[in-house]
Image (tube, rainbow, N blue to C red; front, side, top):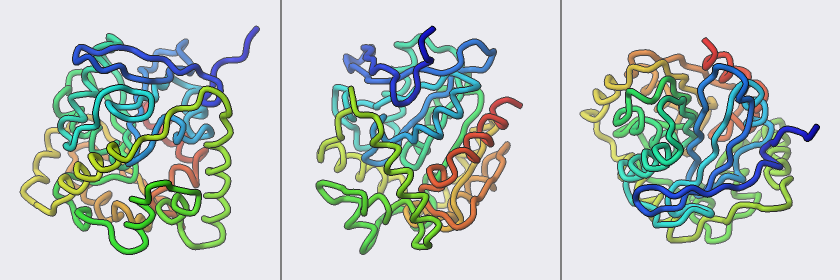
Length: 285
């Protein structure tokens, strides 16, 4: 009997969409339950390999997970769009190629922006959402990065120190757990995903800053996301300020708010088991 695939062993797959884009993805997990597949949308400059094995493998014990590189990212073909709306349209091309009629979505950071749009344009398909370290269109202090954050975010060749700056707190506990996360995401040694290029970086940055222009008139749009939604973050997110997590929870009609202590943007990687357990519980109800 062979071992079940995990984030470290699942094969990279490719499927062509109606737009001519070939989407790279990994699909694995427990398909023996009645649970719907959970599609993961990644953060700024992230690819499939940046998903924490401990997080996704724990979630995959109870459901199928699908990790995808959107258009122009990693091993996917095409170009990265410069708007969140176009990114969401690319996602619909991917789910249609897989012939998925109903699914749950998990969006982290930029991926959370995309998840919100997918829920709005495909409400009949998206059952539940998990929005992690993300914010609403028109939220607060999301339009620019400054100083040390900007340097770490846009550096041409990012290193572990940049991940620590962007995702974790300066406390010893957070730094130690952040180091463990970095070790985990480099544990896969074969068939790794391609690192997103600088053109992808620049297009994503434009999309993020456009989405983040402060505009309270955008917030009522969230009323259209009626699906149950888990909204979670660290208590001191510097990339998408935690205040925006509270904004999401207040404006979404059916939201559950969860804030993790002594952590920032990368709370889900600092508390991977705890958050995976919460996600499975939420999706299973």
